[in-house]
Image 1: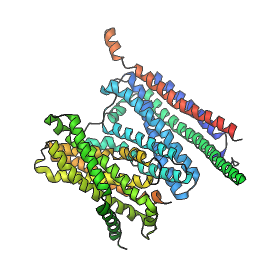
Image 2: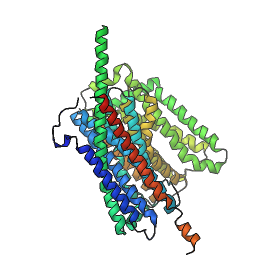
Image 3: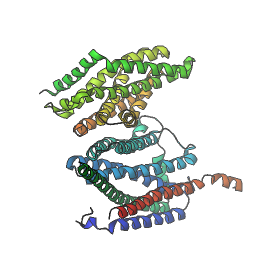
Image 4: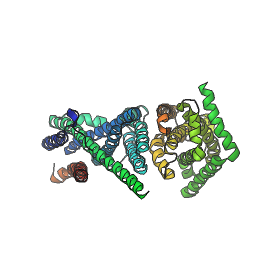
Length: 243
Length: 225
Length: 46
């Protein structure tokens, strides 16, 4: 089923290379993080931030790309885009779980609570639920064309939550609700050069990791769909034999 | 053809069906009333606590009823290929969504007009002179629920396990509406400041504008077969 | 600062390791799962 490499980006060495480089950058991030001086206000807890913020960024990126690929599918109807859209959503769910978990661990010592129903956290949790729902719907629909269409539509509609989530910190301030702590805290923590390098490296490493995971997941989805269509062909074949 | 007439015609069709069979309204009104009453039992007879819980109860009842109504509304459309026939009409599919949305909003407003007084009575809420603001909040909140639930039920029509999937798809998206509406209602019944109420109403308006635009534009893809 | 105060100030530092542990488990686990799945699929689809 695998066709010959058509372009530079189809070359088989790219995926493992991406995997190794993301691993390398992430390890470097760890080194910088754990050698960074503790922050004046937050102490060693500032080391959570190079993990938490890039994880959130990756969730945004994944869900944004889910919508972009979903839209591309709806326009071109190429299954390629459907596989990428679904893969991106799945990766986004993994990263948003990490973001929620590290956020809770950072919040307990800093704000005194693991969880607060503030605008950012609430919308993050909602995004998580929406995309889990999307993956559940994909699991239920058998017809591949319909599954692709429905999931692309959900992906596009759900992506409205990404800018809302990002802007929630600013908007809710104007409404005089719970003030945002994360933005102010982020700025104060980056005053430290060591942690700043770790932070930027981590952003880079996670982005490369995303591209790697997306390629890998997409290739898996391709093979799985090949297997599925083979199975259908075999069933059709046996039906013909039976007749 | 005049787009407003198309929208009104589709909505009028639904309302006529509803007027004859009363499928949706009887079930949902009864259900919403039950939710209000069961939660009244759950919160106990103490009137201060009931009064505090009232806004939340009201919107939980409306939200649940809205999901029920949405799945019922498109169930009638799925029978005998009625949806396919509807989609064959030579009008843009966007207008069909807006028509279905208008019909759903109409039904939900009738429901809300019955559930709000029921909650006010049972939970001993003091509305005071801010009745118009409360009606505006209910209006905006109901529209927000309808936008999402109508869209998602059109997406899941004909799907197996639709009844259990619909809440999963609808609830995470409408939670902002629930929050905004509950906060606004709480401020209204506790005589909160006008500026704060307006802030939450603005959230509801923004939500409705954004989602009605996105859902209308993407709807043609949701229903094609 | 006496030792008790220092200990109190560093009470939550363990969360840093929890966070990184979770990241390694989650992302590493996911990547490992995908790689293994890919190996299996490569075997099944020659």
